[in-house]
Image 1 (spheres, rainbow, N blue to C red):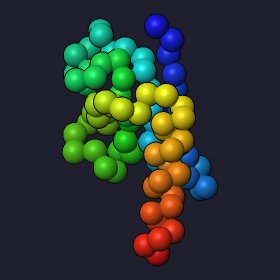
Image 2 (image 1 turned 180 degrees about the vertical axis):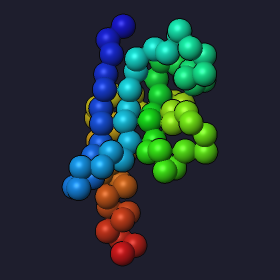
Image 3 (image 1 turned 120 degrees about the vertical axis):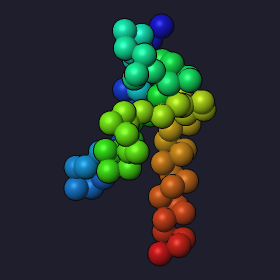
Image 4 (image 1 turned 90 degrees about the vertical axis):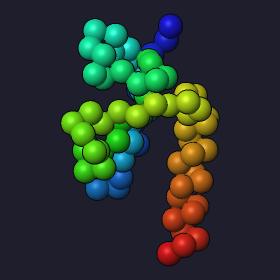
Amino acid sequence: MDRYYYDWFAVDGKILLKFHSESHDKDARYQTKTEPFHIHIPDVLSLSTLTRISNYNLRELYGILEFIRLHLTLVQLYR
């Protein structure tokens, strides 16, 4: 299987989200229900020391870019 690492950065260089597909099969604590597909969230949003959430739908670059575009559009609309 091919792996992907799509990282979304803010203008100031901080990481917003990471869309990854590497397997964490050696340590079950890092696995998600959609293993190997997962999203890394920023540490400040994490409720535990594990900052990965399941990724059911955003697995291809086009879909990830559409997600980002929608987010940016909504932010502009509600400013």
